[in-house]
Image (cartoon, rainbow, N blue to C red; front, side):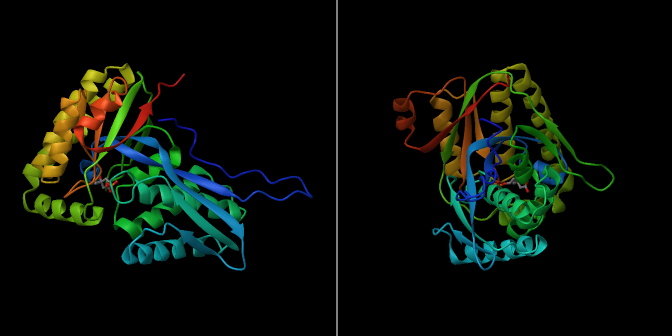
Length: 321
Ligand code: PMV
């Protein structure tokens, strides 16, 4: 995934020429290791995607938001509420903001965080403030809280930084930690879409009820997922893709044990492993659908992917120079 493509507020044109519309981009993300455990303060490894959400502003009488015609009525209402919060916080700059997305919505690829980052960046720039990472993160979190209740913050943090991160949220008595991760070897990620799913909040809430009822059992699973995220990060930095792939396979088993996989997700994982993946697992909240991420040393031929019968997207992991 090519980091660095995450932000854009175009410079003002010289006087006398038409000013280009200001725009901002928020990349989607894919969690390679540690989703769900990250909610409980364990680390997660996530990388940005080149796919994402663009927010483009045109001068208008009032501050408003348009675009994304495929949202359901409930999603549209939630988006309007989230937008209202951040528009108010930035003094409602007179801009009509149009959204365009290359990410599938509600599939575990961070579409809501990408949107929150793009909109927050654009509103901050339009209000005359510097869209510093800290300000973008704080504003985008307010939108994410409307979408997901109490998110761990991994999605919008990776989107705002636009770089692979090992992320740990703050928990009472221990500060959070965000560490930039260096990619040690080129690889291809194949993302398979396993169908619609319920919302993140619902899946996280159902798992929380089990974890509260049986804290020892689920605590052990979450701790192990966090360890895999650290080991997988070390493997990625060392260019040991086989070890990273193995950590992903084990992580999928633990997510299934925690009850957040489904026949469609397990089927996609199995098909991608048969297609030669070094590792494959569900990514994001999972539940009854969503996405699977598979790690390949290099992109498999399209014939091989076609044979899986899955709807797939591919994205590259590029080593930093
Ligand atoms: O909303 P999703 O599918 O991208 O999942 C986010 C990852 C979780 O760990 C399941 C939730 C969170 O807040 O981190």
